[in-house]
Every structure is written in structure tokens, then in C-alpha cells.
Image 1 (cartoon, rainbow, N blue to C red):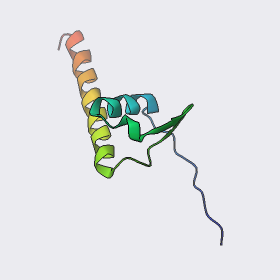
Image 2: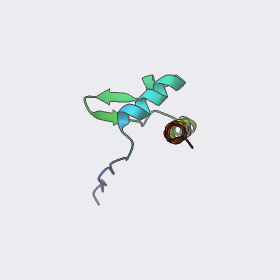
Image 3: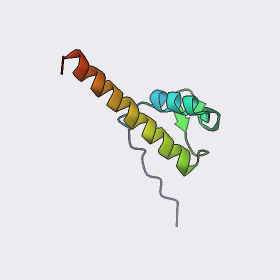
Length: 72
């Protein structure tokens, strides 16, 4: 029986943004980068969760800034 390889799903968030957050949190050195390919296999589940939290906070700030600029 052979190994089944599933295609990678494209993320709606760029790897550059996720890498930037990991760098801010101090564990970007665990992410292997080769050209445009990012390998997150060496980060812990907790670190992955911290990236997600950072993405949510970044999105919330962007939405808040957008509303403020519209005068709401």
C-alpha cells in the first residue's frame, strides 16, 4: 500500500504575514523557508495557536482603524 499525499490547501493569509508574526513572537527560526515554500513542521501546537491569535489581533486592529477613518 502506497503513501497518499494530499495537496496543500492555499491559505487566505500569506506565509510572509505568518512568518512576520512568528518573528515578532521569537520563534521564526523554527520555520524552514526555501524560496516561496514555508515549512511549519518544527513549531509546536502552542506556537501555531499564537500565530493564529496574532493574525486575529492584526485583523481586529485593521478593522478598528478602518472604522475610525470612516468616523464611526
